[in-house]
Amino acid sequence: MNGVLYVVATPIGNLGDITLRALETLKEVDCIACENPLYTLKLLNHFEIKKRLLEHSPANQANSAKGIISLLKDGKNIALVTDSGTPCVSDPGQLLVRLVAEEGIRVIPIPGPSALTALVSASGFPSDRLVFLGFLSKKEGKATRELNLFRDIDCTVGLYASPHQIIKVLEWINKVFGNVEIIIGREMTKMNEEFIRGNISDIVQSPVTEKGEFAILIHNGKREKKEEED
Image (cartoon, rainbow, N blue to C red; front, side, top):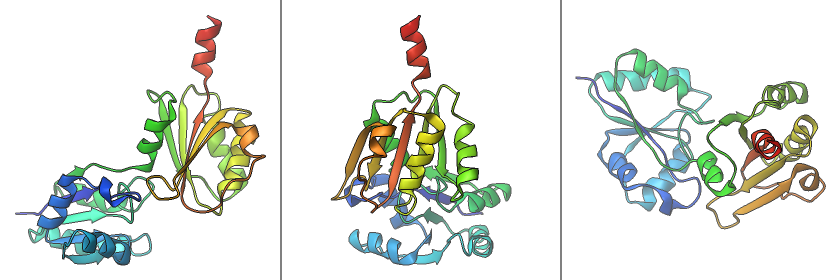
């Protein structure tokens, strides 16, 4: 009988955010496929869990997927984790999950922390129409084209940015969307957690700490403006 692949969400910063079900799963599986064994080892050591680790990173995901599927076919239960947050959400795992599903092997999500949902919950922005773009292209032309696809759509747009790209990303948002309201979450759930709210034109003129990981929500507000006019 085939094993099961568990897609396990892990904390995005504060280890106290891990779920009881995630801990139970990590303790019970035969091995853990992880983005970076060093990061995952810190998590496991904190909760006194000892398991065999299988590296599954963007650099080796095609080859490692074959080995993981072979183990699953041998009846091994495997947990898939990334360095933080939910696998497959702007993190490795999508290829593995698709290949495992194509083999008819069960894939079970163990939901939990996500930078996107954390920021949505603290934003006050409409979430009934939410578009997630992940990380934009590093090239301005392609990045602005990606943003332009949603400029005239009534929705909240979410994306991630690295510390090396955050200033450029904010400038691109201002260029495409104009003076919209945004919220930035930096280092969420960590000691230096910070939220920046306001109009994009004001934020791009203010100093932004270029450290840590960033999540951004763009509030078009088109529907609200129309409702106010009506």
